Image (cartoon, rainbow, N blue to C red; front, top):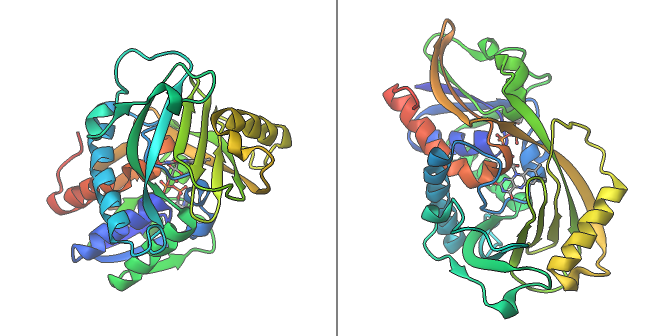
Length: 325
Ligand SMILES: Cc1cc2nc3c(=O)[nH]c(=O)nc-3n(C[C@H](O)[C@H](O)[C@H](O)COP(=O)(O)OP(=O)(O)OC[C@H]3O[C@@H](n4cnc5c(N)ncnc54)[C@H](O)[C@@H]3O)c2cc1C
């Protein structure tokens, strides 16, 4: 079947690779190539965050973890090839949470942290191994894998006004347009959640650390090969893209509590991205007057975490024509 994938962020590229490697003729069209998308601003650690509904998130994230771990293991020099590596993640809390995290069934190796592994002031923590993608390597890797599978990628000179603009008889459209789906599909359930992160000179080696201090208050320190990512913020319905210096200061202050070694670090750059949040990820097939559309958008703060699991379900919806749950 001839397929047009709209969107060249992590969702569109992963769907396109999955479909092209399954033998479909695939063209990706997008108003921004991957380096200019929200995906290029992500911290890109495996962590189910700001995405619903949980029963579907669990399965998509479990499957994605499996695929990303395989990619990490194939990389010759750790993170060098495709940019994916396995990292030890320490998640800490101000108060001991009741029970395991809700995403516990998606991982097999979670264990409580020892008191000496916790930063000062943290009441409880657990450790788990998760994949981390360096987006500066991983998105180009996906583009290259897409080309090798015979698919094509085209940058549009202007955003599409409607998915009907790329529909044609005998063609199926896969809609991975992130926040762009709002105006294109008249979807008012989609909204931005602004996130700001700082990239710093790497102060050495260390685990990935995440501090959950309640809704909208997630601090993280993620060591990548060539830099570390410090975050973050989550401001719903805010869409300005200019980094705020006082927010950067606050991020650095919170990050120092979590990882004292980042004190005095050199900040290389600060970026802002708008997470495409929705009350539920939209992954379903729709028969429209212009032909079939499979929607895959609204992944909130978990687009990388869900990418392969969602792409495999998209492939099933394309091939079987079954309707999403
Ligand atoms: C600061 C920050 C940190 C994050 N950290 C993580 C993390 O650690 N782990 C994780 O899993 N996720 C994380 N996320 C979330 C993740 O980045 C997103 O969920 C993901 O990038 C969404 O990918 P996407 O491909 O669906 O959309 P996008 O990356 O936004 O791509 C959308 C594509 O659609 C195209 N498009 C849109 N509208 C149109 C149109 N009208 N016509 C043509 N093309 C169109 C765009 O040009 C683009 O190519 C983070 C996000 C932010 C902002």
